[in-house]
Length: 115
Figure 1: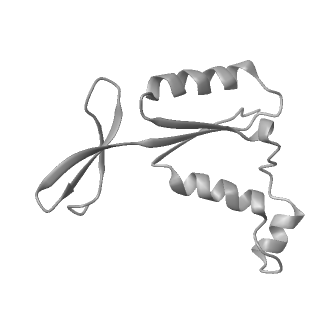
Figure 2: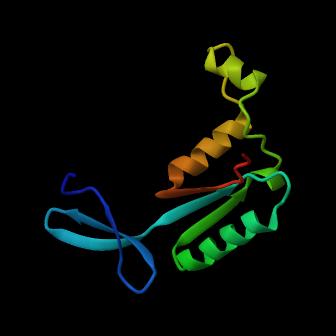
Figure 3: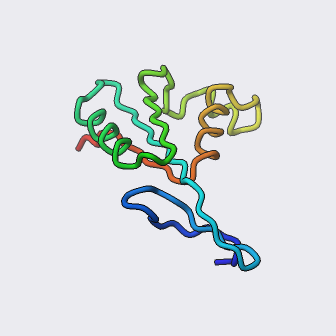
């Protein structure tokens, strides 16, 4: 890890922070967390876990993205295949999600797994 790369830690109680070091200086910055839920059944357990995690991570910056409520289909469909093969540009809704992920320091995915 280089001298200027952030290290995660906690400065005050449960406040998420990043400790950054550069040229002998040390400072704290808030960590940005993106919590993504993707449950089309609007399962109370999924929503409850996301809400509890959001509360625990405050006062850091936390965004909860409920893909089902936003109408985003996370499945890799025919339009995505065309983009993958270079036949079309990336769809605007996919670009929006990519930007949200890129802006996050931490990413939490909450979704049901059915066996």
